[in-house]
Length: 161
Image 1 (cartoon, rainbow, N blue to C red):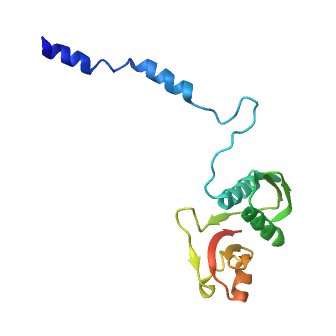
Image 2 (image 1 turned 135 degrees about the vertical axis):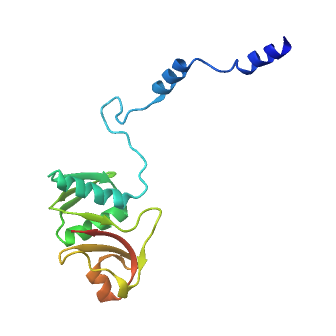
Image 3 (image 1 turned 90 degrees about the horizontal axis):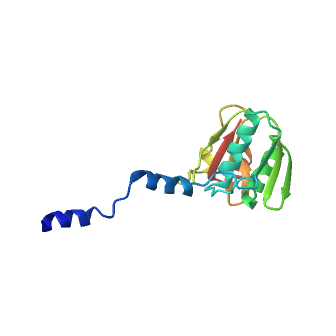
């Protein structure tokens, strides 16, 4: 008889499964708050997120992109404006509002888990003549032609067609 009591004490902490599922579903949060605004999420690479937002908006034929602001993202946006991929760049509080032209493709070289660096003699030229490869150098962000002309290597960020 004592062995039977020990087994009932061991399983006394187990609860009925539907009560556990109801607790999990009540803790789930939605992607929208009660006021209808999007809930902010943690983004590991703001530049990669910005470039993918530009590509997705271009494919969806949207004209305007709103993204989180950082100085590095603003530098990328001004570089894209200089090369004609972006029309206007406006900074509003913690947002960067960008009006875009047509962007066909974005290929990301560096990710948060893998940074890709290159010498000035080994910088790739891209898939076609109009493509832009963004390089983060010690002198700031540059296109591949500027970096080769200045003989500066750096981190390859992305290729934009």
